[in-house]
Image (cartoon, rainbow, N blue to C red):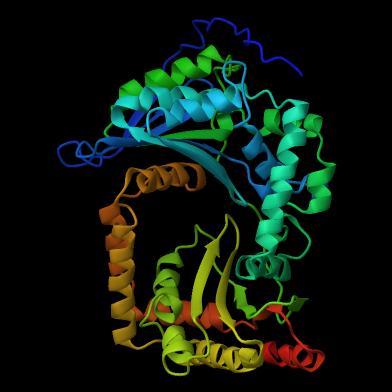
Length: 459
C-alpha cells in the first residue's frame, strides 16, 4: 500500500504575500448580516457573512466545476473526485478527516451539481479553525491514491444503483436527457456504470489539477465568525500547501455559456416494474441570470409550489390522482428547465397528463389571477427567509452567489425584488415559457398501447 507522506511545500515568497483586496459587499445592521469579500493574490476569493447571535459556523469551499465540464468519457469524474477528496491527504488519512469533525460534534459533507461542487463543514464557532484546516487540506492536498480510487468505485456504483432504484429521482435524470440529449447537461451527474468503471486514478488526478486551482475556488463562511481571522486561517492553509503558484492570477469569471435548448415535443419512456408511473412534463426555462427569473419564481410557486397551487388542487385535492405533484425550475448559466412532476398509478397517467397539460395551456393563454399572484408572492418571500435561517443556508447563498453571479444580494433586496413582480410580468413569462410545446419523460410499467398514447400528451 502506498504510504501517505507529508507534502513538502515551498515557503511563501514576499510576492505571494502581496496585497489582498477586501470589500464590504453588504453592510448589515450592528454587524449582523455583513457580507465581506477578500481576494487573495493567486485568485482565491473568500466571502463571509457574520451572524453573532448564533454559536455555530459553516465553512465551505465551492469549486467552479460540475458535470457539464466533463467529456463523455469523463462522465461522473466530478462526482468521483468529490468522494476521493475525503479519502486522505499528506497530513490526514480518511479516518483522521472524519474523526476530527466527529470529535467536536461537527457535520461534514459535499455535493456535486452540473455547474459546481461544494465541500463544507458545520461546527461550533470555537471549532471553526479546525474545520477550516481540515476542509482546506482536503481541497489542496488530496493524494488520490490508486487503491482509494478502486475502493471508492464500489461505493459510487452502489450510489448509482440506489438512484436507479428510486424512479421518482431517476425520472429527473431522464428528463434532463430528454431536453438536452447526449451532451454534458443531459448526462447524469453520477455518471454511468460504464463510465465510472472506465475512470482511472491518473485521469481523475489530471481532472483534479485542472479544476481545483485557487482561481476556480470560492471560500464561503457564515455564522459567528470574524472575517479577518477566516482570511488569515485560509491563507495560511493554502500557503502551507503551496497552492498559490501565481500571485498575479485572477479569479475565473462566472459562466456565460452559449447553450440553447431547442427540444420540443420529445418523449422518452423507460419501462420499469414499479407501483407508480413517474412523469415529468416540461419545456425550456430561463437561465439563472435572466431578469425574468423573479417572475418565473412567482409563476412556478403559483402553479406547483404548495398545497394551494393549481396543480396540487386540480390533480390531488379535487381528483385524488396523485400523492406527489409539483412544478420546479432549474436555471443554468445559459439555459434552464421548467418541469411538472407527478407520481400516479399507471392506469391514471393519461388523466394526470391531460390535467397538467390543460392547466399549463390555460395559464399560458390566460395567465394567473391577481389573487393567485399575490398569494404566490407572499409564499415565495416567506419561504426565502425561512430557508435562510441557519448558517449552512447562508454559506450556500453567499458561496453560490459569488461563484455563479459574481455579486451578492441582501435578503432585503431579494424580498423587495420578489414583491416588485407585477401580474403583467408573470403573465408575460407564462406566455413565453408555458406556450412552448412540452417534452415528456415517464418511468413505469407502461403497456404498448399506453406508451403509444403518451405521444399525444405533447402533440
